[in-house]
Length: 258
Length: 309
Image 1 (cartoon, helix red, strand yellow):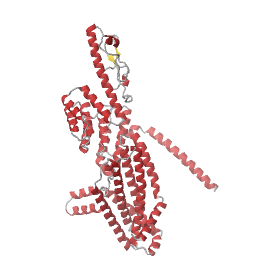
Image 2 (cartoon, chains in turn orange, yellow):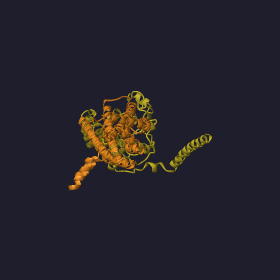
Image 3 (cartoon, chains in turn purple, brown):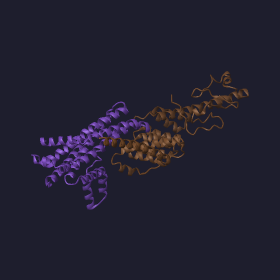
Image 4 (tube, chains in turn purple, green):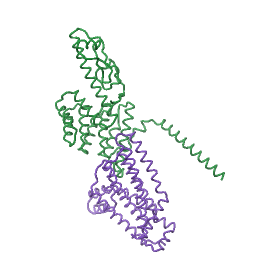
């Protein structure tokens, strides 16, 4: 990776921290400690399940919101402030700018997830009094959540490269919701005929598949995640992210910034 | 500067005052609206729709619905309710969202099956729930045990209870008592011993304090029923020999029919009435007893569970 990409990425990370993005960790800490203490008193026998389900769901949703809301402003904010012209007047290529922005936000999300993971494990230790070997699968679920962040960040950047922040947010949120129904979409496509079938199947493969990346419920029940699933999910997320980033670069390269 | 400080003071005071006023208003609103009107609503009753709407976060939603089912049952039970209209739908939604949430089958079927006020009086729905649980978790022997328990305790359907226990006994790692229970159900042998075995098993296999206390209360009641039956048989025997009932248990002891004064499972001596009936001193402390109650005794609407020792 070129030094310029690293520089842009570190600046993006610093800017996100300056924008108090990591403040969400306070809300997360309150949520986890509240859940860990309260659930045992109002429910029966699901303390551990709630900590894992609530913790991982919160990690996922907080991260998705951060990825979308920061991702959509990464390009437009630089244009509005006119800082983009300063950056591009230096020996920085447009693709380096997009890729650097992507890694900066992805880094922010990884750091955020790391601290949240500490919170999840602390709450787990509080309710279970000890760790067990199956808790290791929670790490796999967290890894899959990070893969989801990579996909949604690249999509937010893609939409941000050609539309207004509002429209980019609408597109990104829509794709997130459609992506959770990706498997249903493929099922519906199988029920249709002719051209509709081809179009529906094409759409089903084009939207990101978030359902395969969601193993929260299984790890909460201490079910193992297969090595193949980890391998193919990693490959899928990397390929999809690269595809969306290439789209963002292609559009941004041709965008008239005057 | 002074103006700014004054604004800050006024705004802060107003904020605190409004916060207090909103709490008071909300408190008043809660009083105006009845608790039942807030509780007894299931806005979305379709488990499939809820699963779709959860956007893949169905595990958390299942936990929320399970907590809601527990709160609903607890609230209705506390109010001595005679019907639990939302209990079955809440449990069905919970288990559709997370078919592996075994705690919802185990406790849920025990909430549904017994007659009110101890449960919803819906043994058939409890059986459907347990069968759904078994289909989704075929390797959990506890679910077969729960199914057999309902067939035996609530429906007195011995062949189906025997079948459930026998199926459970074939699950790898199943507790050995399932085989014994299956055999006992098949032969209808020893009603009392079977009931004792079931409640002992429930006590030993549950981690929940309330379930354990309930099991102990049933075991104590079974013990009282057995004691009263045996003591009344001795009294009949004594009367046949002497022509009258004894004035106290000491006379039975003197006649060599008893060794010591008999006490109930709480250590309190039984009472002997002049007409040869054996009664417990405080039936409120021994819920679920079917024998040994004073004439005209009406049990409290809610069973009082003493601590399990």
